[in-house]
Image (cartoon, rainbow, N blue to C red; front, side):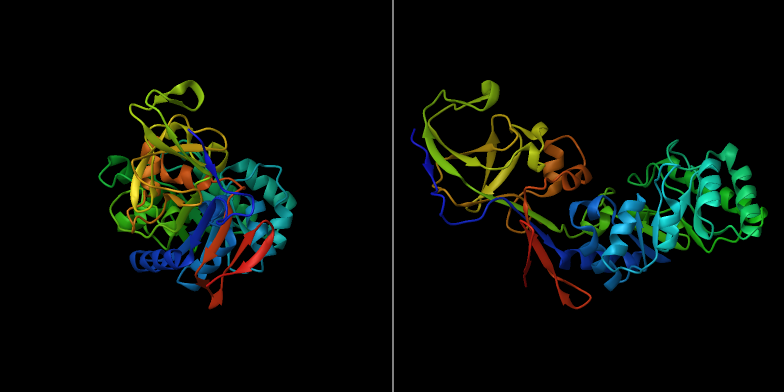
Length: 392
């Protein structure tokens, strides 16, 4: 029953997240081969939790020609890092500082007349992408408003107030290639392009496909495809083998023997059915380990998988090591590419009844991050407690 705990000066670091840029590079090259037009690397949500600047630079070095983000703040962070490639921002409140974005050369999506008017008034000279709702009832102008939006945009263009450089849409069910909604979305987008041309607009960039459609639906490619999750190894369509780019590990803080009948964690949702060995992992839902995966998630310790038992709490989780020998400081792998038998992000998402995107974008700031691989021929760096460290 006595816990074995590492002393303060013991071996091993704390929880660590390793980002593999060679995996990102391989995924980007695959998408450049699949896309029939240009590739826009979408690095929103800090590059899907992998580091927006690193993912952006790696993508641009391996075939992407454009970058996409949601907010202008995300776009400005790329500019502040010295990235000069074209950047499109497509989700901003109507009172956003559009002038600063235009001054930084950031292109803007326009989902309706209110945004068009705001950009015309406050940010003359903007390069815009008109955004059509192709079947999600979410972002983009409704079809009933599309013609009026195109006419207003053409009038502003003729007055020299902006330039319409693109038209964009998004498919609701591209992760299910055979779903009829994809054909409906393609048809609506084609209609939207015809309306735009009929109003006198000549958008050079026309983009509808995201990750799944880029992999499965060439009819949706047009002049450009937008790929985000696919860059970091997530394929929502489950049709293509991509390379996951994250590995999450943590050391065992303590190891203890317990009797049969010992309850574990809050609420004693798991009770040891027989004498066993438990290991304490210093990771919890504050670090992105989903509480919903309690009692189902597995981890890798010394080459074997073991179950996390009891409730995952804010800062810690407990692994049932059963009869296996383990010591404080042994590395626990929460997820990785799966090469060594460790769980993958896809498995973690399944245990939590969610999607991979939520797992990778929900990782906490307490994790030490190490970036491996190169972009633009330079060695990547990692930030640990605010200090940059070169790794190879």
